[in-house]
Amino acid sequence: WRTTNATLPHKAYGANCKRRLVAQKEDGVDASELASRAAPRLRVAVPTSGQDSDEQVLLDHEVGFPHPADLSWCSGPDSTTLSGGSPMLRSPAAGSPSGWTIDRTFVETLRMGSPYISAFRGTIFVIHLPGSLVDSDVFPSVMQDVCLLNAIGIRIVLVLGPGKQIAERLVQEGIEDEFADGHRVTSPRTLKIVKETAGSMMFEVEGQLARGLYNGPVVGNVRVSSGSFYSAQPIGIIDGRDFGLSGKVRRIDVEGINRRFEENDIVLLTNIGCSPSGEVFNCDSYAVASACASQLAAEKLIYFVDDEVVYDSTSNTMTPNLTLRVARSFLQAHEHTLPMPFRRALRNAITALDAGVRRAHLLNRFLDGAMLLEVFHRDGVGLMVSRDIYEGIRPARLSDLPGLIDIIEPLEAKGVLVYRPREQLEKMIPHFFVIERDGMIIACAALVPFEDRPRLAELACLAVHQSYQKSGKGAAILSFIERKAIHQGVQELLILSTQSFQWFLERGFREGRLADLPETKRKCYNYQRMSKIFLKRLGGKRSIDENDVLTRL
Image (cartoon, rainbow, N blue to C red; front, side, top):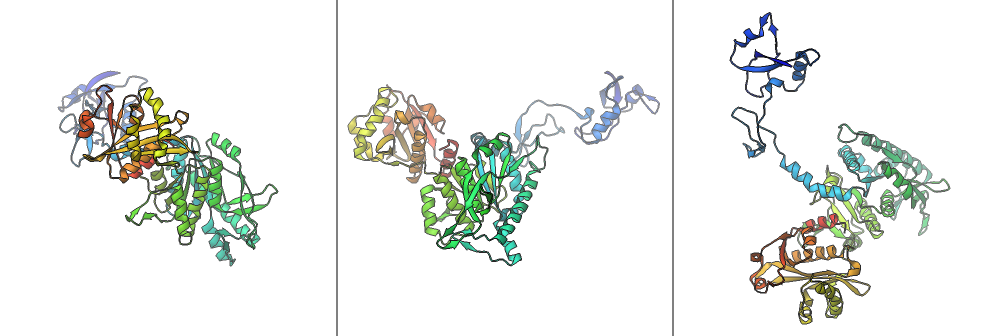
């Protein structure tokens, strides 16, 4: 490149003006003569032979790229707040352009979701898609959300339930729609309609998945695998009622589905199942999803229901999470009043959790983005049913003292726990909780309140039997203690530690100071032991639920 002086029409920095640079001549006038006609002088690069022409530069400018003469730079970024409260990059001088607006909501949401992305990558989600969802306006968005889950490494099984479409077709054909014990009675004529509607729904789902991620460019296609991934058998005759060609799951082809997962395929199942002898059955899609999640050892089972919510009648507040025991009791109490889709979803969720699935979610099908919010946002938007991670936890009894000593003594000898006289342990029994397994105490912790600081309590003597360490028992009893503390009105937990503080730091505690201790605790602080002080501010119960999810409890 060689350079020459040229005069350019000048506007404020960043103005969208259209120029044509003239390097040597314009209408026969020499460039040096042009330079004397106006004040602003710029050094303009003139392409030599074989380099980009001025016409190409102009073309780039006309299609939206900045002209080289319009470009400048500023030091930074120096974050400040301009009018409207939006954080932006400071301008280098008056009249210069401002920088990029920082969308803090997006940044914080993405940061919030990143631990869940890491935790769920490589796990299996089984998602039930009812026919009412497929006919709704949010269905395309849900399919794009499924593609997003697949793109970040979550293994997806979709189970289609065209119940709504089957019912509509039966009405059109004048065929009676019979139900018994929650199952559709399937005649040969009904089965023909079932197969047609299931096939139609399958193509509709595959068509939406083919669009990929939000109509953007996709690296590689979103591949869908469908086929005979489970075998079925007839329901038969129950209480004298012949269910005809209605069937139930016999076995899931776990090996075949896992092979599809290795190819990053989304697996698609319908309610149509075949027996090894070639018979075709109409299966309950809710039960197919439950059986699939159980036999695949899925991380999550997701059902889309209507807008039903479960609430606590004593406080008139919505309940976002139920343990397996509470969910089972709730279903028994409201079996005959719950809407059928919600009842079937909850019943099959309980069945799946009994078989080992970690968590099930019942989501509002009318809410666009419900699945992403439930999976990646700490507050969630649906009803989560969890296995009872607190199974075996109970208040300690005086008869548990020998078991407590067996756990605590080895840790006292190593200096992990401070030595406590047996008389002191006996007095602390009302504050202790233990995990019992087959009559053996395998973990313990104490929640000790402070009379002079009622919103603060000490988490003391958290210990796990050496045979059960690294099995999640410590995290489980910590989670239980946090819930118990919130129930008692405690807002902050305190611990003293000399060796195990890293474990607590990883679970949300922060280092404190001696001045953070209540007066009664400060007076008896052991300066020879020099324990570090750690505190944790307790959020709501939902935040504890999400910590349980991330720690895979």
